[in-house]
Structure formats: structure tokens, C-alpha cells
Amino acid sequence: MTSVDTIFAVATPPGRSAIAVIRISGPQAGIAPKLFAANCPAAGQFCLARLRAGDQVIDEAMILFMAAPKSSTGEDVCEIHCHGSTAVIQLILDILASAAGFRLADAGEFTRRAFLNGKMDLLAVEGLADVIDAETPNQLFQAWSQIDGALRGPVSRWRADLISVAAQLEALIDFADEDLPDHVETRLRQHTFALITDIATILDDNRAGELVRDGVVVALVGPVNAGKSTILNGLAGRAAAIVSDEAGTTRDIVSVRLDINGVPTSILDTAGLRDKTGAVEAEGIRRSIEAAQHANIVVLVADASSRHWQQDITDISDHMGRVDLLVLNKIDHGVPATVPADAMLISAKDDTDITKLMGRLGAMIIPHNQAYNNAIITRLRHRQSLRDAHDALSAGLAHDFHQAPELAAEDFRQAATALGRITGDVDVEELLGQIFSSFCIGK
Ligand SMILES: Nc1nc2c(ncn2[C@@H]2O[C@H](COP(=O)(O)OP(=O)(O)OP(=O)(O)O)[C@@H](O)[C@H]2O)c(=O)[nH]1
Ligand SMILES: [Mg+2]
Image 1 (cartoon, rainbow, N blue to C red):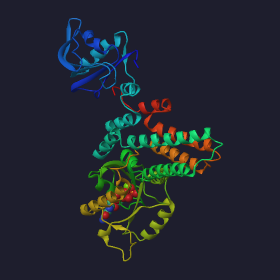
Image 2 (cartoon, protein in one colour):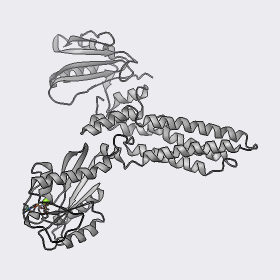
Image 3 (cartoon, protein in one colour):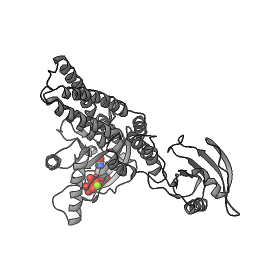
Image 4 (cartoon, rainbow, N blue to C red):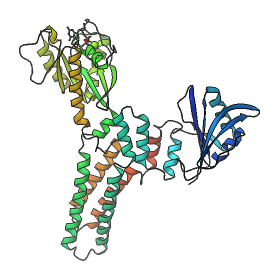
């Protein structure tokens, strides 16, 4: 397909830089250099050229040209690698914008054209967005494995299998009066059951891929003055939160982002919990509880040197409903005679203890993360479609193939549609706006 407009955008970040890249894609990309009185190189080549605005030299730039369909968008693409000065970029953009048939690209429009021209499927588009957003190496490796077919491979196989099962069932509808031979039915059922099992195995992944992509949230909660902010600062290696011996120091959530075992982890320090407070602190406490409810890991920090640490633990555990790690802090003041077996005893002022805590958190994140190498679901969207396919297949098996093959066939069709949605083979329009809106302009 050809798009009428030729689109352009700066592909590099805004601001001063040594080099900036301006991408141009569309039917007129090849004449773009002429707008600057420069020649366009042959397809697959580059050249160095002076760009001019009338008599004035704007810049000396590298110009690349790729001819359709052998380009990233599948259209003619021209790239201008100019000096990254505000003035150079602005002049080039102004000249392009005033040329007939040229316009500034929308966010993600280059990728959208690549998708529409069959250069990449939806999984590759999402993978590319994840490559650009990756903060940790694991996120990056996962994104590339998604682009390279981690999910596309099995989904395409399942879909082909399913279509063949559905086709066999459809054939039976035409012969409804005749008896379905037992061995045919057994084979179809076994085939379907194997598919259901395969999909269920993939779904049972502890959300490992999504956690690597989305990151993990660890909330530090506990009574006032227990040392939560001191622990946060220790983990962050800097004074991110204010620490003081005044109870109720932290009023709002302080978040620090760390790379723990390749998983981007947000550690949240929250307002200490206590009964009698002013309005601001009460709001802080409400936020603490809310943050903990949305966290992947809730760490309860108690002050081992306080007389009521046991009561604090009971009260707060009840309140939170869930505590994943209990930390008894300030043991430099002495270790209580009896401590809960699963509690971790630390002094937040001791670097070795902070390192141990970091190790413990890492180990807790690893179960979420353990299967990331073979985790192939990286978004909720994939999971929902796989679940739909799984449920439709199970519903299909529940029908009597002799009595109602058409109902089973309909379920199989629905399962195939659900799988097709993952790669973008069906029902794609509604997804496109959502996916491309997360891209930056120039991609
Ligand atoms: N001796 C000792 N003091 C600590 C330790 N951890 C924190 N403290 C001190 O305890 C006091 C309270 O520490 P914070 O980190 O502000 O406690 P918090 O839990 O964030 O308190 P709020 O924000 O008020 O809820 C400060 O004076 C810290 O220096 C520790 O392991 N040992
Ligand atoms: Mg604090």
C-alpha cells in the first residue's frame, strides 16, 4: 500500500547534540534533498552534501536513501544526518514542512507504516517499543526475543493446528447424518487437548515476562520511626528520603528505582503507620496502605528496640492483609529474646545488613523473574488473548461432536481469532491507536 503524504520527523532526542537524524518516509522522500539543493544518493547508498536554504549554507550532512520496499517502512526513505544544532534542525524541518505533500509525522507513524506495509507484525511493533523503553539488559533481551518470534512461533503453530481441527469439524457438519467414526473423534479431541495443555503451560508463568517488562514494586511499610527511610536510603545508596528520629517524618511516598537482577524495581518508602495523627499524616498513611496493596512485594519493617514491636507487627499485618517479608530493624540496640522464625534481623545503619536485605529482595524477585528466558508473554494483551483461546477450546471440547459439530467448530473459530489477535492478523484496528500512541514521534 502507498501513503499519500511524505512524513518527516527528528528521530533523535530534542536539544543540542553532535548529530541529529531526520527521517523522511513516503513517495516524495527521494526528492527531499532537492529542497536543499542537494542530490539524493542512489538507493542503498549515502553521500555527503551541503544543504542550502537559497544562497545560505545550512549544514553539511550525510544523506541516506532506501527505496521502497527495501526500507524500514516499506516506502522510500531518506535520512538526513545533520549536526544536532537547534538552528540546523529547525531550518531543515521548516523547509520540509513548507514543501507540498510533506508533513510532520505523528507519534509512531513510521512504525505504523512499517506494520501496514507488512514489514512487521504487532508483536514486533510492541517489541520495538519495549526496546526503546528498556531500562535494564533483561528487558532489552526480552524485547528482542519477542521481536524474533518467542510468542509468534508457538501462536502461529497453534493457530495453524486449530484451523486444521476446525476444518475437519466443518467437514463433519456436511455429513451430519453419517456417523462420525470413533477414531476421527478421538484424534480431534486429543489434538485439541494437546493444544489446551500447551497454552495452559505458557500461561502458567508467574507473569515473569510481564514483570520484567513492567517492573516490580516493593513497598516498605511499618510503624513510625522503624527505620523505613533509612533502609530505602541504604538500598538506593543515597539520601533519597529524609531520616529523623521524629516519628512521622515521611508523609508522602518516596520512590527509588533500582535494577535488581535485571528487573527494574521501584522501592517505595511510605509514611509510618500510627493511630493518632493530623490530617496530612493521615493522608500519608492512607497512601501507604494503598501503595502496599498495589505492590508486588510488601516488606514490613518493625523496630526491634521498641517495647511494642510484636503488637506493631500483629496490627499492621492484619491491616495490610499480606506481608511478604518481615524485617526487624535496629538490632544494634540488642536482639529480642524471641523473634518470628521468618523475620530478617538487621541494623539499617550497617552496610553489610543492607547488602543482605538487597540479596533477600533479589531472591524474592527471582521467582517472579526465574522463567524470563522462556517467558513469552510480555503484555496483558497477550495473556488475555491466550486465555480466550484456551477457554474457547475447552468450551469446544465440551460439545458432542456427533450431535453438534457446528457448535464445536464455532468455538474453534473463536480460539483461532483470539490467537490471530496476538500477531495482529485479525481485529487489528482497535489495537493500533492504543499501541502506536505510546511511541515517540520519529519512530
Ligand atoms: N540505632 C539505630 N537507629 C536507626 C536504625 N535505623 C534507623 N535508625 C534511626 O531511627 C530513626 C528513624 O529512622 P527513619 O528511617 O526516619 O524511620 P522511618 O520508619 O522512616 O520513620 P517515619 O518516616 O517517621 O515513619 C532515625 O533517627 C534513624 O537514624 C538502626 O538500624 N539502628
Ligand atoms: Mg520515613
